[in-house]
Amino acid sequence: MPQGNLTFAANFFGMKMKTLRLALAAVLMVSITQAQVSEKELLKKTEETIAKIQEEKPNGWEKKGVFTFLANQASFDNWLAGGQTSISGNMGLKYDFNYKSDTWTWDNKLNANYGLTKISGQDLRKTDDRFEFNSLLGKKASGEWYYSFFFNFKTQFDSGFDPANSSVKISHFLSPTFTQFGPGMMWKKNDNLKINVAPATSKVIMVHKHFTELGPAFGVAQGANSRYEFGAAVNAYYKFNIMENVTAENIFTSYTNYLEEPYNIDIDYTLNIVMKVNKYLTTNFAFQTIYDDNAFSGFQTRQVIGVGVNYGF
Image (cartoon, rainbow, N blue to C red; front, side):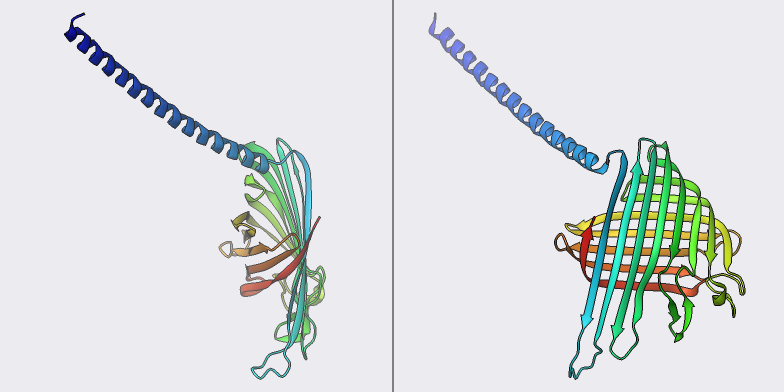
């Protein structure tokens, strides 16, 4: 073969090999990229599946509770800057018993709190007193929407006294009681995020007659022991992690009475922040504000903070 033809063949063969190498490199890079993308998509889908499994609890009953004890203490001895020795303690109980099936959901929550404080030179006083039971039944409608019926009951354990005159009793055990119930619609993403709207809600307030002898109390007319209202209620619950071992629980309720001053809306909002130290120790912060001008013309607020000992069951 002539020399020129050999040179041309060698060059042509070299170009073909170079092109082939480039093509193989391109295919390899595309394959690697696609593999990385597929791996990321697979990892994402796996994480989503795990989260969904954790979120979607099995059908049937689920029961859980926690008992918390918070303590605060301050002591002063020859302290020139001043101060009063005090000790206080708060006990809290939360218990949930919920039922779930493919078409039904039934959430029940019990909250009970009681606290006392003793300041040197003063009588023992309560700092917290609440008993509340919530029940929310839902029948699946479509997607995350449910036909619902709710029941709410609130009262207290111990006597309450007028802040301006500690000798005047203004409430006691089961007086007053607040009961609400009615049908509605619920949107429920999961156990930690749900909203219920009940446009036909009955509300009953009951109080002992000796608290209404001299005038109205808690919205109940003078000389009566009960009051009935009919209106709309909105209840919302949202619990989330602020960061690792720190959770925030938001509880919101509102009510408007169609029968009297419908634009005057009752509001009750509670924020509970729990900072977990270990299995048994937490730092707890609770804030609650209530607006109900039948009971008080303004906002009522309470705050509780302290180191807690928890027992889950």
